[in-house]
Image 1 (cartoon, rainbow, N blue to C red):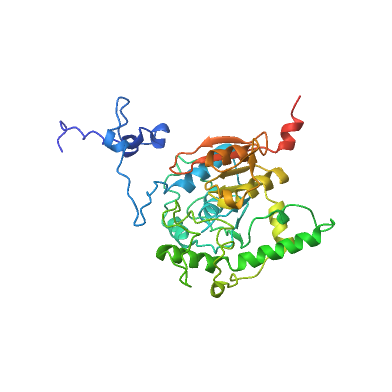
Image 2 (cartoon, rainbow, N blue to C red):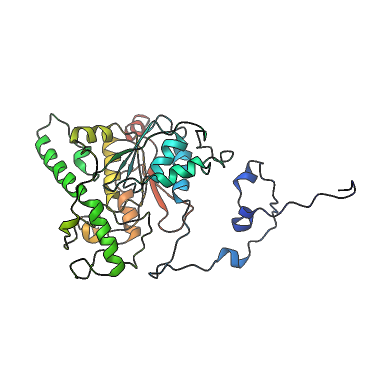
Length: 354
């Protein structure tokens, strides 16, 4: 190349082209162009939505877990001393990221379904989580650090885990409630898979129409119906009532994990959303939860302003009214993206009042 020739101008940043925002540019480390007078093309801001085979619109939420995780870190600050509960955490993606990216002290997934961490382990091994370390301040680990484990309690998140203690008069009742919890959780994974298969064919194994899981419903692979929908279905499939692999937790062990938690999280936890807020308020710890489906028939006792809670907006209002320090924010992903949260203990807030 001759000395008179100039280098070609940098291309337009793809992040800037999509939304006129770029974290790399904000920190001065992006080598592409970011013209202030750039206008997002109409077709870019209104992309044709793709429908799945069952007719539902696919949602652009592939980074939902990372965006939720980063928001939690923005509000909480350094999280390396936190003991976290990821309620209805499904495959364990959020918990794995917290353990191996944010480096919390301890994290447990509370969900009857078995964890499926292999994909997230491969992503970490290939460096996908750490390639943006320059702009994501919650990355407190290096790719070469030893992998941290994710704890798992294959149970439902219910009040006997955080209410009372071993010496109170209601301990026997709590033991009975936990036994019912275990019984439901033990048949959960296979029973859930039976209903997912039934939903695809619209028939249960015995030939009856399966009414509990509609293939047109707004569920993704990571947003499967929550804690009570399958076990409470009237169409029982006894052949799928199998025990969860591994040892059964005791009430004392499970309750200890819950009561020692310093932070409770849930992304689209379905029927567990009330329990997340109730447990955090009872234990007086911070929480972050992004509610999704209302499940009004399963919660007939929910009331807001004297009226039943039947819509998503009413659910948000109902949950936020559980404590005066609960805040609300809209997160940057599609679908149900409102997060309810509180970042400080209520006792600390009261002690600081004049």
